Length: 303
Ligand code: GDP
Image (cartoon, rainbow, N blue to C red; front, side, top):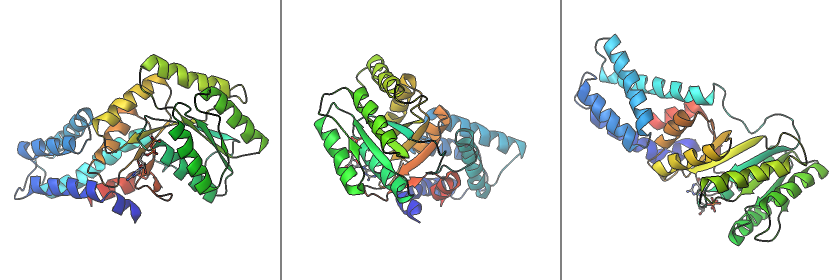
């Protein structure tokens, strides 16, 4: 499967390190736990989540007196899966959702994380699923952002609403939602500016976009999707912190999980922020976006 391929580096590295830590050991002792702690942190699971996982394993080791290292793999899987369940729920995410029309997804994230690419891939998936999609180029601060989104609109062959660079992002969002209603579109994907210059500005910008969209139709956006670059470790944590402080983020997309040994960031971020990871990016192509499947993720992490 492509997920296996995409996460190859993450899992190879995690698996190899784990195997090394338990090599020649028959029991999960303090030394194994120390090594495991280091492995989790170096895999970008994050300190807080790592401590939580280690504590849970310590408890199980204490309860059963001793655990063989062979069981460590199983227990780790169980604990990581259970952590992910707490934020993911037990259902796998899906592209298909409520029949609400238009279903408006506001996409946020800093420049360079793969926001535009994720929007393009999502648009493609929705279109493939038979949905009518419209893009809104509300990142009006960079000409390149508008151009990039236009390229994706052409590639996927869907309409895009845009204005010139420097125009009001909220006005673009307004036009997009209005146009979606006129065209009876199913899904609206709104790109937003990814400047993290300061929290108040970010908050004001995003809330204005929301407020103005709501003048067209109430209760939008239906989803605020934060895009994070899975290869940036602690930066991704920091961005999640800033965006969740600035607006209500309802779902996450973690990109660039191909070519990185840092898939662990998915575990830490979903635990720390209790926001479901809906999609993962595993390449630059149109098809390289996958619906996040908790069990599949855990399996490929350990394989
Ligand atoms: P934006 O500034 O956040 O809109 O970022 P872009 O969408 O322009 O992406 C920045 C770069 O990351 C581009 O070269 C993309 O092709 C690349 N990219 C985006 N998502 C992925 C992914 O999942 N895997 C890989 N390998 N590259 C990606």
